[in-house]
Length: 97
Image 1 (cartoon, rainbow, N blue to C red):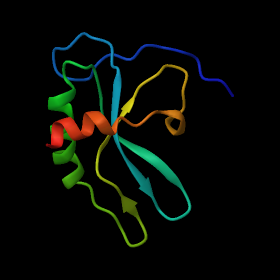
Image 2: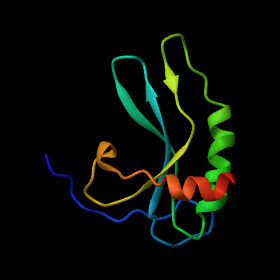
Image 3: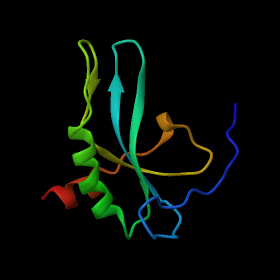
Image 4: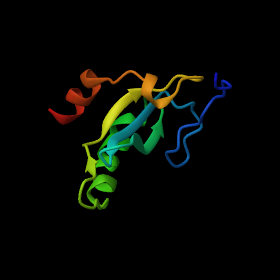
């Protein structure tokens, strides 16, 4: 079923820009897989949000059989489901190095 397109604002404090990116980790319990969202952010706030996402990730607990990968950056497009988002490894590498 098609999703209704809508704009999402950057969730960083005092930012009024539209979000262009989703920072999330892939989570799975062995049967179900989904993205655990840490931030929806604009390009200007991306670096800070990506750094903060690793702190949030450290506080997540998993139980036996669950897998939670490291935070990743995805392009956010209205009307797309999470499994259709494009991962931006180039941006991830620019913040890690």
